[in-house]
Length: 224
Image (cartoon, rainbow, N blue to C red; front, side):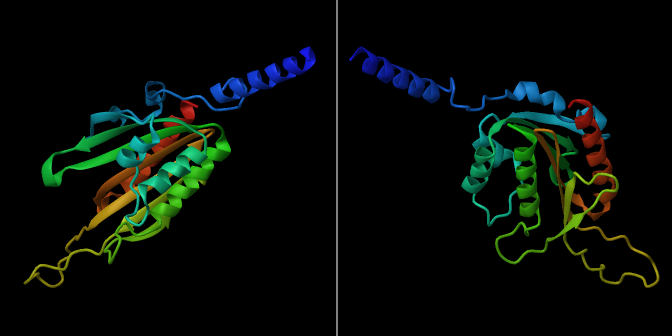
């Protein structure tokens, strides 16, 4: 009788530890403050200043404030992607240049997962989402994947729209530069960390965005 009571007590103790995370293999959480140094400083982006920092310890806040999801994707589906990949925590920041209709902003994020495989899995999911048109119905934005030389780990998509028509009475033979609204989206991983950037500007900003992604990648490698 005493032996049976001892076995039952051991089993109960084992379940209690698993439920509390003592031996169940559950992952801990990573604070937003500890991840913030991995973000690119506003001083590294000429012309932009820091507008706000974001605590994304909760994946619901991360999805609502940090991701540029297409309208066909439910936020709950995105939250599930992060939770299923052993999400540990995230941080973000918004950099701005100018104000009002002429202002632009860059949204940067970093998230930590249990391992590199989970980070890569979410990176690839985000990239697939970027390749959907952002609008639910008819859309002027056409997504196109872009490769960066020497950075096979980076996933970049340009969602471009057609340039506006020439103004009435435009002189013939005169070259007029026409820019159009464009979304730039990028993701990459360094070990268990997933980094991303979203920039809404015009079609003339492609080279600057690519340079910024390279700078962000180099910074991430230095803080790995």
